[in-house]
Image (cartoon, rainbow, N blue to C red; front, side, top):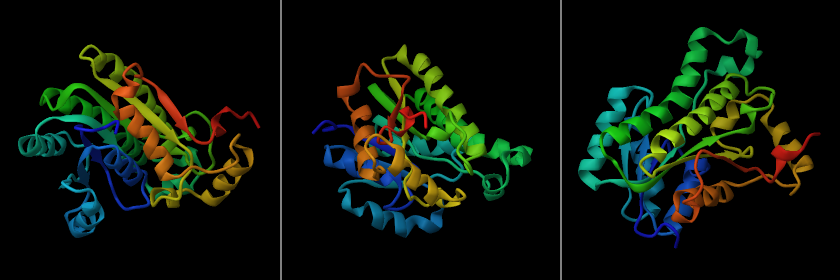
Amino acid sequence: MILENKQILIMGIRNKWSIAYGIAKSAYENGAKLLFTYMGEENKDKIEALISEFEGSKAYVLNDASVDENVKEVFTQIKKENGKIDGLVHAIAHANTEDLHNDFIYTSKEGYSHAVDVSAYSFVLAAKTAKELDFLNENASLVTLTYHGSTKVIEGYNIMGVAKAALETSVRYLAENLGKEGKRVNAVSAGPIKTLSAKGIKDFSSILTVVEEKAPLHRNVTTTQVGNVAAFLLSDMSEAVTGQVLYADSGFNIMGV
């Protein structure tokens, strides 16, 4: 088991169809002890039921992970109760509905800032706060989630493409900064999956169809498959890998047409 004796914090779990859940399942099956953050005190019972299959796991409320004080308070509590972590998974992103449904040119200033703050800055903040609180064990690995819309125009992805581009650039700079301490930072660019977040993208089903038709493997990916890639990046098996965007999309990203 490649994550045996490792403690992993997964930020942003929502339900069993989410990529975060797929990562949690793979990490747990590979021996990791799991900690979670989620949004909304009203979701406590639902989240606790969701993670009950992961024996020994704990979940903590974190509302608005782009606010410095919020992250510091929760990370401090988690460290006090559980000690340091060996891995951090950032699965947090959001954009206003109107900014996904309208043409990108009509993105509001507020909508632009919101998407980048929640989807990209929150990862930088998590890394910075973990460093400042001495929350990361030696050789810790940080992993975030991105998508092909960061480099190519995907209809309906709009401002999220900009936010994910900022996230991917952040991965590279964080990798350089934290690499001085032996810690690694990478991103997984997952193929399209029917998650709750994906429902906000206009004509999402057509994207699934195109991937199945055009990807070299001629199939869409699952949360389990993406979870396995993330587990590899969290493990010591990937100790020479940092600053990378690793695609888990059945090869769709290599295709020209």
